[in-house]
Image (cartoon, rainbow over all chains, first blue to last red):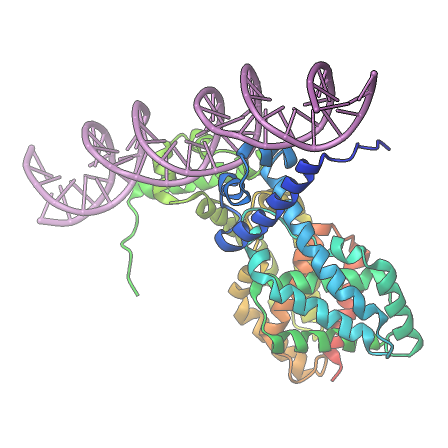
Length: 185
Length: 185
DNA sequence: ATTGATACTGAGTCCCACTCATCTTAGTTC
DNA sequence: GAACTAAGATGAGTGGGACTCAGTATCAAT
């Protein structure tokens, strides 16, 4: 495990600026916006962008990660909710957040960056485990439900909901259906 | 509704050649292969490719559609199956076919072509309607299930299964869960 | 055969991701 | 705080690929 020495102060500053600019630019003009535009908005030369993010996909990936950080943090709080339906709420929230950021994610997807919802959720694994456990012991969910499976299903729904722009009602119906299945058995 | 006059004989021939070439090239070298390469393999000038498929995404889309035609035909037969569990079989088959063509679709996805499983399924809408109807009257499925919803769910699963390479067992478990939900209510 | 529309050609344009030789600056040492 | 050096920034330049269009060839209808 190498320990890459810490970035110089200006480098750190620029990196942050570039990411900020990228989030904005890609949200507004789509993922096909040029790297030059990102550089311009960040007030930095192109070379600098490429120093921090060697390829455009790298930059896109970084943007996605940073967006997911927001999502993750936002949703993490729910894991602490006390009641038995917390799992259900949690899932609804994930879908909702996905839907809210639909425009951004769609834009990114448009030029090849697959948004790995699953990865983001994996970071929440411990929290989700707790939720599943609680739901299970409350009897709201079949005994043999595996967290992994839940995550896969949720990712799938989220992905599709984002891509196709499901409305709130449709999301609700779908979740209801899913939980019907999760309960049975 | 315009009636675009039929293509000239040579045009039709070239169109077919280009599509063939594109399927091969993209399968081998990924979706980032150049349009020139496709033209070369088709034995045609670049301009001709662009006459038939004005943008590269259009070409990619056409390739995907032609692949899906195979999938669709393959699966269409099942719609005729007589027994009440036909719907379930149908869904399983869709997932399986998706999994089989994972490599190809992954290649395409890699450079931004989202594979719209939903679109392909929409072409089967009448057949699926029949399946849903039959399942409903056989009581295998809740009365208020809408075809649209089924398609959305199936697309989602298929998409995720392709992207993440679900194994057969996992697909089975997931479908079982889904149908548990579809039955209830 | 004539003719007009339809289709093909491919050199050229433009845009964009990415490079690199050169200059600038942050952090360190005495 | 001056000198030093390695990390970082710069931006004109390169290569490649998507797409255009004026010119030419081909089809099919009379």
